[in-house]
Image (cartoon, rainbow, N blue to C red; front, side, top):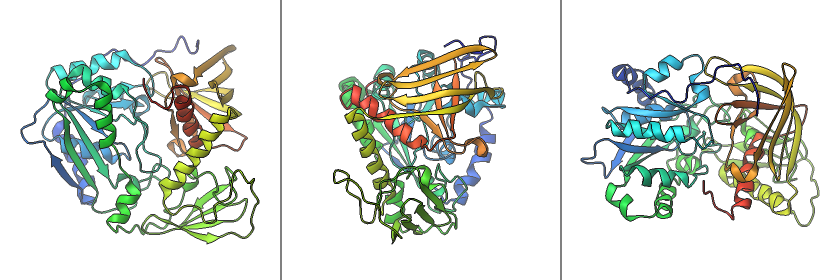
Length: 428
């Protein structure tokens, strides 16, 4: 794809710096953990010193604070998406962050990881590559196990609990959760990595990454009294289980409603959904029966939507198209508005076609090559929902306009299309 050829790109080859300013980082990150009465439990960590790979789940911005204190007092380099560098590249490089364009096969990143480990430091990787949409595990590609096998240093997991329900991706303000937790575990030793195959390593990593923030909240009886806790919930729960209509859900205050059938749910202080009834009933085909009350557990609703998308893919009928506004991020300086484009996602993959400065451009990403995709809700509080498409040299934020849509459905479809073409696996 030829686009913005004269614009400088982010220097992906520049070697990562060691983490400087550690005392400042400790000072800046500790208050967040104290406010939330954060607890850290270590398992099989006695005597383990760097270098090692730290695999962290990803639910909220405070994940990094938890990781910095989990590895205290050692140095750690974080892999960070390019948008995290906007306007502060010098600072993030100074504290050792490594830039990555999401969901791309980047050989240069492996070189940077080797650099970090060879000098005896920790590399922190967020293998889900995005915030969890509903507090449960996102897709983990097989490349995680390949990386572990390649470098043959211990693999440690850091699984946090409570970060999502405290600040959901769809509703970012702090909800005041107390008693957040993190469990730091030496999952695989060097000896384990030598004995196990890549598939066995991946199996152990996926087992360690099973988590559910809403189940965790309920089990501990943690009540969230935040008055706007259902705001934005329609970003994740975009389809009504009563009438099966898509893109007519709306969350506000403590209620989630469907404007098609007037069904509504109350989000309790324990994070469950209580069905409040519907003013009218919409008939559905016998092959797609309506659910009388929907789901009380938010992740169950989300997985029901996934099953529906999977069925569209299996039948070969999945398709979405719309006009869009596109913003490019070739480097860490600022977004560039490159105007309108035709955007579609179908059984073949992603397609984007537009023009900038009088020259046409086109980006096609085959469905079989992209195991997941990064999405944003109300990005930066002013741009709206978008899909983040990446190549090794470009990052394009695509904002569908003038149509009913859900970027969550697009993300689910990306994953299900990849499964479809790879026989249910996530090898990469």
